[in-house]
Image (cartoon, rainbow, N blue to C red; front, side, top):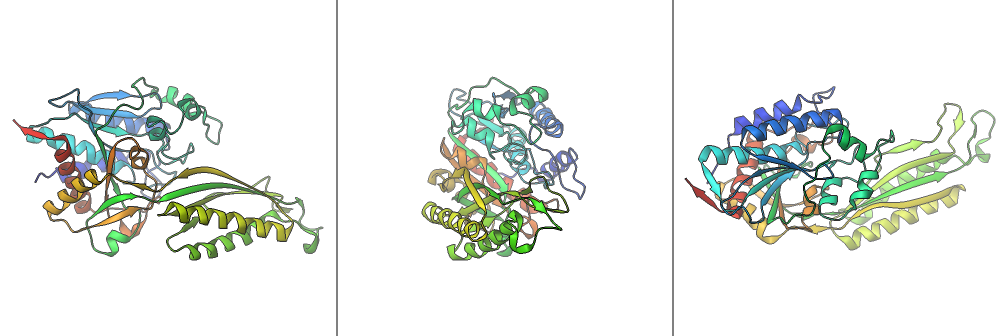
Length: 409
């Protein structure tokens, strides 16, 4: 079995974390920002030093390529993302990119040539923190989101994806939707299961279903000092009741998850009753049918509170990602690699969305999870150990080699 240079990978992670450093030790590189541009530039510099060619597609996805003996064959691809949450961690996304780079470097060290070409993808706007939806770059690449629609998407300041690509220099011409033989993505778990069970690696068998809703609740804005409580149509107090009801709702759906991540009080003022409140609702479950039932129940729950309090309600589905099983052949390659390396492991379902979810509809796909301390992610306190970082990359190395074929010179 082959092993990567753990110290080199760890140093690369530390160097990337210096770009867009967070206030509390994490990272802040919003998609297609100046910090993201700098992170991509450093990655490109490392790829050049490793002898990899670089190409960019029209949505800004970046591909580093190592040729194979049969260079016309569809490539085996690794990847993840370099963009972060506004106050994100040092490992979410970037670990998968730099673990893939370390595989390329380690192949050079061992003087191994693969039968198939290898590519390493940096997907644009995976987080969805600046532009929505999340996993935007991989959605465009795989044909699940029209390029024109993605380019026209704007952030909260009204700046479009197209403008941001031009500003950062990442509006490329590499063809979208090229054939891939397979896709492998290494990632921190972003949850507590592996750490709680003392395991080094999660063999990811698929991703759970996700539904995003946008909710708008309207009442009547009025003066805080002159409007009796019984006469109020307070949108914010109504939303408070909705949120409590939604939290109770989650317990009725087993593994269902309900999250309100953003809440905005329109034209808010200290002495004004809230007339309009908007919030996001994130629903998740491993099974599509149960997620559909959860969405219906959530809509009924919101409507009941709105009717009771005399509020108007508008609920729009923003995004739906069905439950996605990963390909048995690629999952098997990961499982065989981790077993041969002797690392303690288990099968696991991804609770988070990843670019691999989109790629699974394009080619055979699998993921590799490593533990993160306390299960924390999307948090500056996000952390992973040196040994777990190294072990996950070892598994990636051997799974990719098994898929791509190899010849030692």
